[in-house]
Image 1 (cartoon, rainbow, N blue to C red):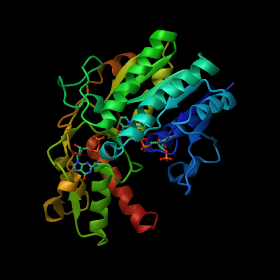
Image 2: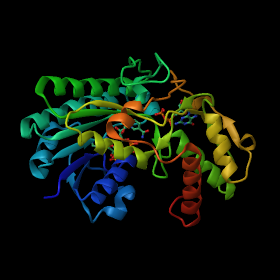
Image 3: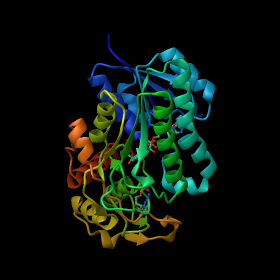
Length: 324
Ligand code: NDP
Ligand code: GDP
């Protein structure tokens, strides 16, 4: 019998890649979707006939319990979150409710409905924030720098706590930034690749941006969802850093993206204080040694390949009218 997986956040970047991956592994895939006045399933449009969508919201306990009762999953991947750091300062309570307490709601629903369900929590390198050591490992102390980072620290520890309190198979993946042509337009990688493509095609004149000096360990989302699945296939639950082990500045991202379209980033980029954050995370670089050793996981796409892939996808989407 094929396994059943429930993905929260299936309409997001990672949800769409994970759904594709689990379908390719022969899973029956279910996705939790919240009600919105405008339906936006662009990222899963190509697989919508192969997945089953169930209604629910991370802020509503009853809906999560019902979803588990109806779907009867073997595995739950909790990817739903208010996931944008900048928004977490303007909506700190909502971010805490969905990104932090939502994890407890799902864990509690698992406990009530079927404690044998395996659980994956989408933890984040933003938990390291003002980094206490370089590179960051599973043992590096957390020092979050945004309401989002704080909410993710809560989600991480409640996952560990339910594992230890109730013996749940609950694992936390501490994923460093991962990107793709499906990344939200507000995140810096996609913002840069989209604007480089738009400027090249004469559809925009400039790119307004914040801090050029911050450094991130950027990988490809398609590589990272494989690590999520591998965690739930282990005999014992655990926590894993998933990263490339390399870091690059926002300025390097600009250089690479504008290079792809044959332009100089300095001619089109304007620094705008509106995009500078109240508290910054200056440097993230992960050590994926444990994920390599225990899970046999490694990334396949380099940063340079990732940026090229994203610029080319944005050029193509702008040309064929999928993007404006
Ligand atoms: P996205 O922002 O692309 O997707 C977030 C998903 O969560 C969407 O499907 C969204 O639904 C859903 N969602 C938001 N609020 C609710 C709610 N109240 N109830 C139900 N669903 C909700 O994020 P990513 O795919 O990039 O990231 C997936 C997870 O991994 C997130 O938890 C993120 O914080 C975490 N993470 C991501 C990293 C990255 O670099 N991408 C790094 C480390 C962690 P809708 O479409 O309706 O908005
Ligand atoms: P994050 O690491 O989850 O916050 O991912 P983002 O892609 O939103 O931001 C990565 C880094 O890029 C942060 O240090 C931001 O301060 C920096 N950055 C600089 N300019 C911008 C911008 O215009 N938009 C965003 N989103 N980030 C920017």
